[in-house]
Image (tube, rainbow, N blue to C red):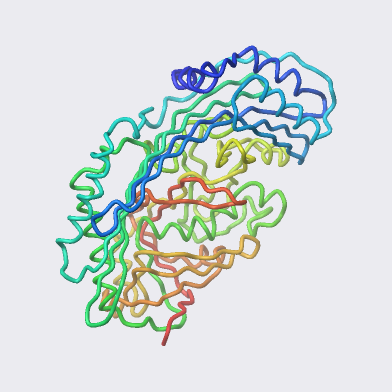
Length: 480
């Protein structure tokens, strides 16, 4: 257990601006009263940097710093938020008074004594990836990625590489006296290639990242991105139009877990279930998936893109079992929705920035492994589709209906993967799809570190994953 990150956050977010712990305590005295269930201050400084390489030339570079404090108070189901992009005692007090006015809270004052809470050992090193490398070294990473891709095929006509780094420092002070900070690095590299042959043009993408320094992008890692992107593009050149119909579909491991994230995960967030707008509302203890299906949300996976040592209410993240052996066990909760539902927070409170309200969100959401070999699952299908990669998709949280485009898919014929197909869309219902799972592979894994989740206009980094799965009776929209 350590408070080192909290000390660092204080030194970055408070001390340079002349704000003391006593100032926070005085501000909480202003933001107190019998009508306020809980309140918090969220201080944040985010520095981000990125470069875009296209056709071997740096086409774009960016560097941004965003800093401020958000003041929130909650009474029942009502939340009031005021924020300032200035960190100072005066700005804090002004935000506090604005929140009191918004919420029509009473003037009763209570003394609040802040103390640095002991938090779990950090899940990632508190490195600043932006400062650890010179600009030329960062650009060299994507130049190397560009060269690795180009040498793999003479059919490449366009290559675009991007690299980004984020260094985020947060400090959360709560009216219950908690004070906790976190240092959150995040890096990502991405490659997009366009190939052309016999008048046909296709695109392939690859990339990854996580909560570490840019040293993560070794030559071996970059070579794997190049191979993945180029192979995908070339394969799609040979792809045939996908047949339409209702088939068994085998989903590959890793990134196809985005289907679980969208079609199932959002429906298991606390706010949707408290309001009764999720298909999973009031179904705890009921069978909602096939036997053997266990889905968790785990914010504690070391160095992962979706992981957090503490969530945005200062609570430790955890591994929350959502569905166990087909039975719905619980929801992902922040403090607000947990308290209104008579449950406990699961450390799933997240916010895009100090200027947005925190809401229950996923971290790393994935299905656990089963007992089948992937080859056994594929060989069990006489005629169907094998989907290795997904593009975009749409989901209706209330009904659970989804539609996802498959960016990389093949026919399965007589138990063997044969012809690549394109133009495939997977259509179904998340709840029904869970019940149609027939075989679960022993190869569950998370994606490479590229997930971004949108909700209520806020975007946060996430992880997704699953093992190889066979789902029967899914509708495939195609061109035949």
